[in-house]
Amino acid sequence: MRFEIPDDRRYLESHEWAHETDGVVRVGISDFAQDELGDVVFVELPDEGDSLEQNDEFGVVESIKAVSDLYAPVSGDVAAVNADLFDAPELVNDDPFGEGWMLEIDPADGDQLAELLSADEYEEQIA
Image (tube, rainbow, N blue to C red; front, side, top):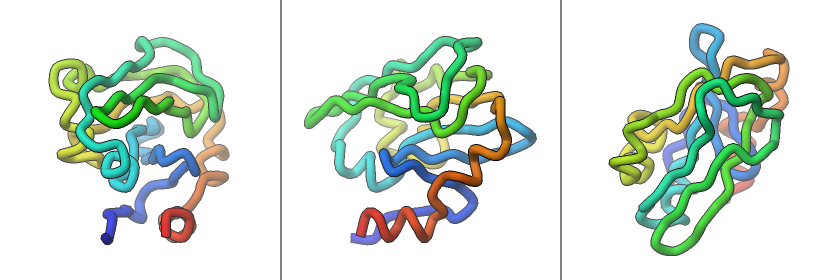
């Protein structure tokens, strides 16, 4: 199976993606991760204003098959959370790189994004 891996994002080995726009880093989980999880039934996210450190747990995604921790790709403050996921967690399955995004972080260190996996590196990891 071929998974969508947009090359305008960076990836964690734990399957989160990060995409910077206008100085804010939007975060979600990859197409591969949502496929492995199966139908997502619940998403737990931090509160706006919470501070995160790179690689710290920031929440949980629960599916019919598993519960998985979510990890922050960069350090910074939570600028926004996708409240739509509380009522419609299936957005993570339906559109993991669009409407299924999870949170936005105001990054403390812009260099951290460059340390993450490129799309090609991530594709090699999941192959």
